[in-house]
Image (cartoon, rainbow, N blue to C red; front, side):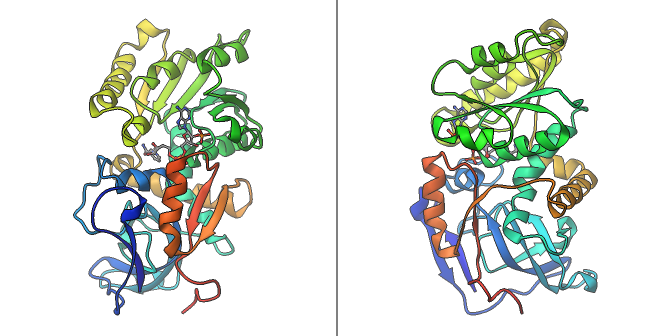
Length: 351
Ligand SMILES: NC(=O)c1ccc[n+]([C@@H]2O[C@H](COP(=O)([O-])OP(=O)(O)OC[C@H]3O[C@@H](n4cnc5c(N)ncnc54)[C@H](OP(=O)(O)O)[C@@H]3O)[C@@H](O)[C@H]2O)c1
């Protein structure tokens, strides 16, 4: 069995391809999954750096936030009919491997005929986008949203779902990714070329609901939340969902904490801010608090994927041995989509 191992936190060089002679056995309530596709993304690099608040080890560990694969063996206490089922899992770590031992309780079936590499875009990127768009109130068709970092995996998922839900989208990205954003029918703003707050206000001037957007989604965090909040129309909602500047070492923990405190303050004093409010979204804590929503929303998204109503952007499919290369490219930024690791050589995925 091949897998990727991280024995110390750091740069892409800490990702090592490792092998073991035996295949792991599932324990009570667990299954062994033959992994067909492992998603890579910014959050994996956040974990690799040792900065991710929700995972600090123990070392060594196998990274990989989400996976799609076939249940090969069910442990005691798991319904035998799960065996042979294609499933998706939001595992947080453990995806970059040919096999993963996972608790059965959070697994979601993946419909037949769906490409595993596209399916693995659902558990982290699309679920985050979908829950942020739908679980804090209903945005009516025609409402306008602002997506910060619109060329990223969550950003493109937000744009794709916005298009599906009949929303208008404005997205910030760097100049090289304007076409990625525009491909989803969104208006792109190059955030490096000027003040995006002024650009959003210009684009939304004269709107019936007031200047600004109905909802904004921001994972840059810290002081950046104030700029996104300034883009809201009266009654608008800011969803913060990350601390990207802190993750890459551009700002400290204090700045990220201040960003979170601001969200709470704006929400508590919403009346003083024209009914504008703010929340923080976290996929794993929301899954723990509302496991039934997690499963229902995953099923909805897989149905949309099967029906070709949504279109995840997979920019590359690479073997496990290329995990270092994938992280180097994510660290450099500007990817415009997701790199998926395929742990098995093409054609060796069954049995
Ligand atoms: N809270 C949760 O539950 C949750 C769930 C999933 C992800 N996240 C977080 O969400 C963030 C995005 O994840 P991802 O997988 O989408 O990452 P990604 O694919 O690497 O995308 C990040 C995007 O951010 C853009 N960006 C960087 N600096 C920017 C700035 N100053 N202004 C605007 N855009 C900027 C980049 O755009 P350009 O390349 O075009 O410059 C890049 O496309 C990460 O911080 C991740 O940890 C949180």
